Structures are given as C-alpha cells and as structure tokens.
Image (tube, rainbow, N blue to C red; front, side):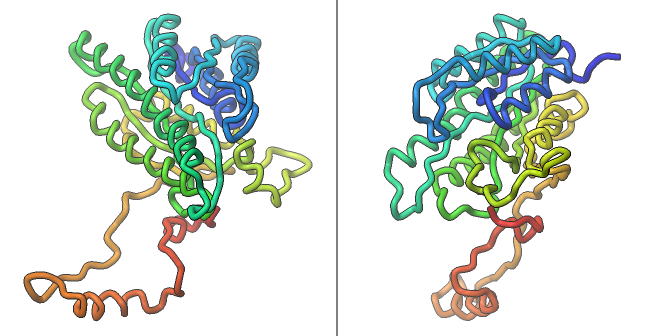
Amino acid sequence: MALPLEGLSAVVTGAGRGLGRAEALELARLGAAVVVNDYGQPGRDGSGEASAGPAEQVAAEIRAAGGEALAHTGDVADLRQAEELVRLAIAEFGKLDVLVNNAGILRDRMVFSMTEDEWDAVIRVHLKGHFNTTRFAAAHWRERSKAAGGPVYGRIVNTSSEAFLAGSAGQPNYAAAKGGIVGLTTSSALALAKYGVTANAICPRARTRMTEDVFAGLRAPDEGLDPLAPEHVAPLVGYLAAPAAARINGQLLVVHGGMVAVVERPRVQAKFDSKQETFTYDELDALLTPHYADRPPGETFAAAEVLGLKRG
C-alpha cells in the first residue's frame, strides 16, 4: 500500500529541533523525501555560531529509518540562501512538492522597552524567512504549471502562533510576525490556487526550546506522551501536505495535545450606522461607549474568547 506522501519531496525549515524536527520525521514516515533545513544556532534568540549538527542529525535519523533526506544549513531569512534551499530540493529530487516553514527565534521584551534590533531580528527570521522560501517555491510551481499546461502539486504549511490570536504582552515582535504570516498565507493561497497549490497556517502549542518559559509550570507526565509534545502537531502537518487535503486552502488551524480547531475568518460583532452624512464624536460616543460598558477597563478582545482557548 502506497504511503500518502510517496513520490513527493519536501523542505522543512527550522527542522533541527522541536516542532520542525517532529514535522520532518513525520513527512518522511509518510513517504516524502525531505530536505532538513536548520541554521543550527544554539540560542533560541538566534545567538551563537551556526552549526550543521542539528540538520545533519535529523537527516541521518530519517535515513536510518529507511527514508530519504539531506541537510541544508543555510539561513532562510537570507533571500539567496532561501533560493539555494529550494533549488537544492529541486536538484536532488527533481521537483519540490511540499514546503513547511517553521524557522524562528525569540527576543522577548515589552513594547516600551524593545530595541530596534530585537524587533527587526524576529520579523526577519519569522516573517521574511517565510516569504523567502515561499517566493522561490511559488515560482517553481508556477513554472511547472505553465510547462504542464495545468495545475501541479504544491503544498505550503506555515507556522503562526496563538500569540497572534490571543495576544502576548511581552512579544510584540513575535505576535506581529505571526500575524503577518497569516496574511502571507491567505494571500499566497489566493495567488497560487490556480496552479494547484494550497497554502495553510497552523498555530501549534508544544513544549520546545522556544516555549520552555511559557510551559515551565506544566511538568511533562512521568508516563505516556506529553500533551505538549511536538508529536501532537506533526500529524496535522503531514495531512495538510498530502493529497487528501486538496480542498483545504487559506485556512488557519490551532493544534495541540490531540486537538485541532479550525479558525473562522473574523466576523462582524456589531454594526452601527450614522443617522447623518457622517459620524460626529457625540454620535459615536452615544453608540460605542454603551456597547463596551460591560467590559473591564484594559481588557482586549481576543480570539481565544471565541475558541475557548487560554491566553498564552
């Protein structure tokens, strides 16, 4: 019996550790040939010397299990290195079918204390890194589609976060980047659908190097799979990469611990019309102030209220 991703090739960025590693292993288990990308810096803030070790180790793990994999240690936030990554997959496997964008760093700080470098670095790795690989994968699929005279096979799975959905007070850079990734995903989904390509985003909740502070108070169980294990997220990525998910496009899904929630596009909660040519201050005060009267001062709207998810 053929595996769901048999004959397909995939690139997974940030795949040397944590979520990316689990996703690369899952894609390989489902039959895909995988390019494991990781810049290999030891610090979760992007500090330290780059190393080939993490990517090489995961690629070796896939090969030891009977799969096909090779490592790429470039920085996906660099446009030329991202192009090299996509071209490597095409050169080695003949084509690229699946792109999973996962690479990221953290530089947490309250908005009133954040430096320009802390802002730029996180936006660069998360948002620009997602764009860079998407740009060259999309060009590859468009060229193949034109040559074939019709749709080809292409899947993009991007990594957003509940920090975008529910807010994260000490992560304005990270939350903004993750929100931007959702916009990039929906735009890509619309632009590439005619070529046979889907683009979706996930908001994973998992215990990784990047979230060790968030889940510090939640100890992993002594027995059984940790509810916050990255292995709970990887199957959804494998599914979204597969032919079975052909009708899923431009979607945002929250996933963790055996749960998947499909997030709706924002809906209008209330609507107010002016009784004259345009609103006046007094009219807006009369309409909007009572509407928010029951909300405690300082409380914000969060999608978490709709999803029934806790902030974090």
